[in-house]
Image (tube, rainbow, N blue to C red; front, side, top):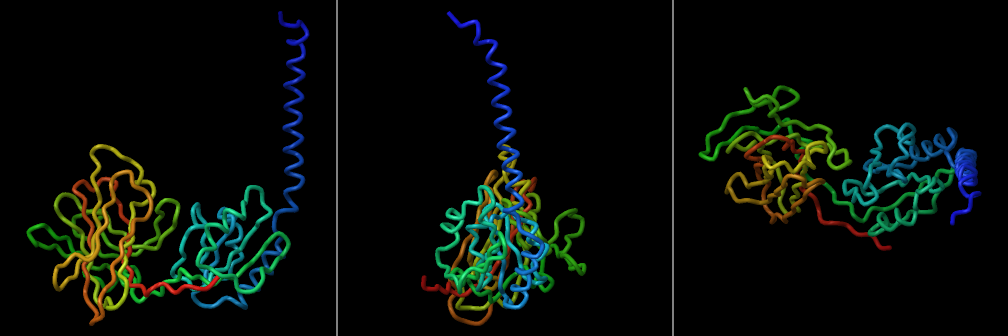
Amino acid sequence: MRSPSLPRALPLLELGGLLLVALLCLLFHLRLPGKLPTEEGYRAVARRLQSQARPGDAVLLFPWWTERARLFVPPGLPVYGYLGSDTDDLSAHPRVWVLGQPELPRSDEAAFLKNFLPERRAVGEPEREGSLTLTLYENGRHRPRRFTASDVVSRARVYLESDDGARQACPFSGSAHRCPGQGNIYVAAEWHEVLYEPRHCLWMPAPPGDQKLVAEFDGVPGDVSLRLEGGIIFEYAFPKDAQLTTALLGVDDAASGARLLDVAIAPGQEGVKKAEVRLPPGAPRTVKVWVRSRNPDRRQVCLDVLAVEPAVGVKG
């Protein structure tokens, strides 16, 4: 038999629980200001970056969501901070400055370092400015670029190509190669997001039917690794509707027609897909970069083609 005093005690227990939660929340907010950076701390970090950063350096935010730090980083220094950026190779950069706030709740510095440290070595000791830390690392995942398609898109030859070889030119308008009568079918270097990651890439949406959208690039050097990177931009990547079709991305040698690289992105596949091949020594070549998907609905592709040197490791 239930005690008659229990129902009368329940409201008091609930009130006590609410008061405890309120007290913990108040304590959290009272302690939080001491864990946040000051304006002077940010300015001190900015001065160090201004005086010591080199061309090609990058800044990585830790935790990734500490966006306010971007306001203080000197112009010209790329800043990375997005969900998953802890595992980014940042391969375009020989050195990486980690701008951290390890005292923030749930920052989990140990998990960050587990993802970040492989193939990287700290240069000197971390500098601390209040709750901010700034640490320079040599990036053993650096892959020097010798060709980047998105950097030379204005010099590309762009056209729609049918399976029978027929072509329709997409002339350059000064900002993009636009295919006449094709609406949103064009090629240009733009910023897009692929699974939370902002990428400067070639906008190359697949055309309808049996056509493919092609961009030809001259001057791709030999004796390098040729890399194809691409994905469906964020808001179109996750649907798996039955009518959606696989997006096919490829790179062909223009002279021989040989397939060098290809990537297939099925409906629902998120993130950046990559393929890489080592090119033999020889004269610079012309490559054909192409995209196709039988049903182009929600197949908006962001891609790039890179010629990179072999990885340069650092000793830990």
